[in-house]
Image 1: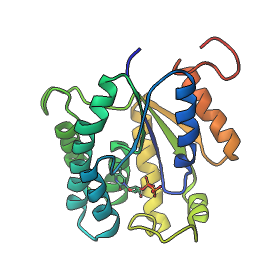
Image 2 (image 1 turned 45 degrees about the horizontal axis):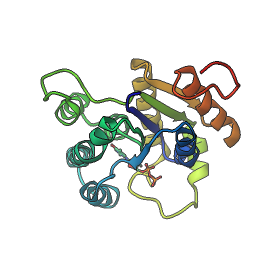
Image 3 (image 1 turned 45 degrees about the vertical axis):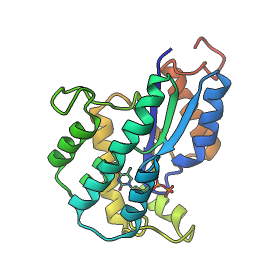
Image 4 (image 1 turned 135 degrees about the vertical axis):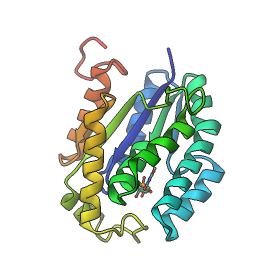
Length: 219
Ligand code: TYD
């Protein structure tokens, strides 16, 4: 048994976080230890940076540096130790969100983001080429118009949630481009009723042999 790094991604309002409890329960029922965390955040320092990124205005480079600074602390303090213990790390967003929000959404330079990614997630230093990446990314894909309806009036919006529809169209495009480039993505159609969304999540895990097949077949 090895550690498993699983991330949840999608535009605001796609409903990813509402499946975290069930995911944690599913892995625990299979005898796994689960470390549940989120980005930006997951450590005291990174949670402080999260507050700044979500509330203060800043230029896209500052925003990118802060999310990667938060990520560095989180990787070193939480994610790597948990994977070394062979935990399942359930992480609500990771660097795909940076490529989608700061890159596609804000239009910030993807090459600079890729450089920061190497510094922060380089397993044996920035030049080794080997990056810490999720084993599986559940991508909750939802039309930005539908997500906006779901978010409307839900609570006081933060700096991202208050962006116009056009911003979320770009973010959604950013996720689609990431997903097309990496087989670790499982696309979940988040437009379906919640129970069916959960069934897709279970199926994505079962297909990859990460949990027993919910339909009763071989794991
Ligand atoms: P989110 O994960 O949606 O948490 P909540 O459910 O509490 O709103 O909020 C985090 C926000 O931060 C979200 O709008 C996306 C944004 N974000 C970035 O812009 N870049 C990043 O690298 C990450 C991890 C998140």
